[in-house]
Length: 196
Length: 291
Image (cartoon, rainbow over all chains, first blue to last red; front, side, top):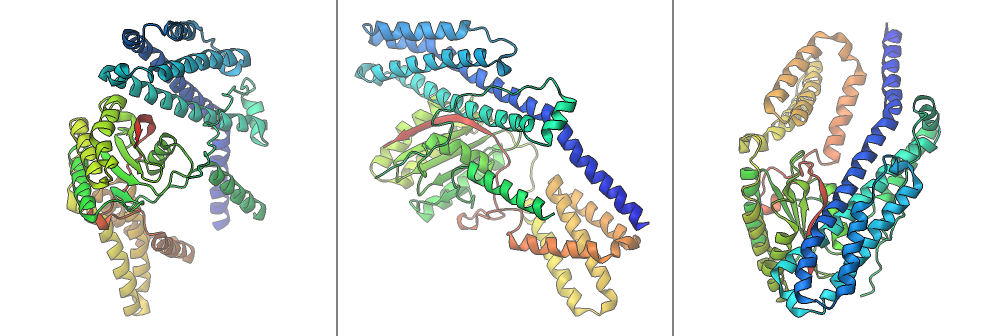
């Protein structure tokens, strides 16, 4: 009697374990997709803040035309970039996406840097609000990117390591390694050394 | 088996080395690790924040840090929020006010659910207009108090608690189960062997009852689970096997050793009954400032 009970228990435990492994690929795939959606959201949010920012800065720093047009151009490029459906498994498209957003990011930080030179602008409540929103959004972007990197790491590990690799190969032959952001310093969680 | 254990160990080591910063323990609604707040301020903050949670279910925690360990405060902040799980699950209505006096940085970290109300812009205003003027003078108590008051003022109409909690019963319910277990263990030693098996059953079933209570977060479920499991234990001879009892005893020891489930009782701040995060999520919302 006991033996039968034990073997049934073993069977249940084994099926739970294998059940987990069988579902890993689709589960992690969903996690990656959710993290990616979050990344896109935050980039979109940043792009939405820009027109207001430009309108405010323009009033105070008219002759900084170069930087202003650079931001506007980078924004329209980022918005017009059509994200292909297979972007997560398409290295080129993914790289392009990263480049386009990276350009917008650097143009924006340039804009914020020059605004330091205009005390009136810096005292403007509207500008301060926009600046804090932009900072918050940049922070959200880096959080979303890091979450995405971690989700992809988990997913790719599943497709690359044994024995999960075999299960994935058997059950999900269409599953492909996903692209991830080239980690910036912050993505890698490298602590900055502080000597004071 | 041995190999498995080693792999498990390796796995833990790897995960630990990944989860980078070291976080302080959540000992209450005010975690003054840097030791910059007076006990009067801590008491005042704790009672304000407790009131806020009772009325809105929003969880706000004030934390002062000895060091940011080389991370930027925004980088540290959201990870601390996630680590503690401040805010209710599903509502994600947690806020952290983080002060790092060594680095002279302050941050309001806002959970997903409150990003709309306590926006980045408002957080930034609170930091620059309410907190930093006092911090610049070295008055941490006043700065933190003013900041927390503004945060509470901003988010006081956001969420409603999902159910009206009977405060006292909720705070003491887990204790009753523990008292029960202690009492049975104590009585067990007094009585003759004849009755011992009943006591072990009582202990086991009160454990099940306790888990039922913790899982369902309802006292009634806990009591029902306790009664049912006790009856089951009485009827099923199979459960008399020492294995079940031993495991029950070892759970009991573990429970005591690790300090129980309601990690971090904030007795210092008059926050009787313990405080723990509700599992809220953070995505990097909020604002930072320095002085």
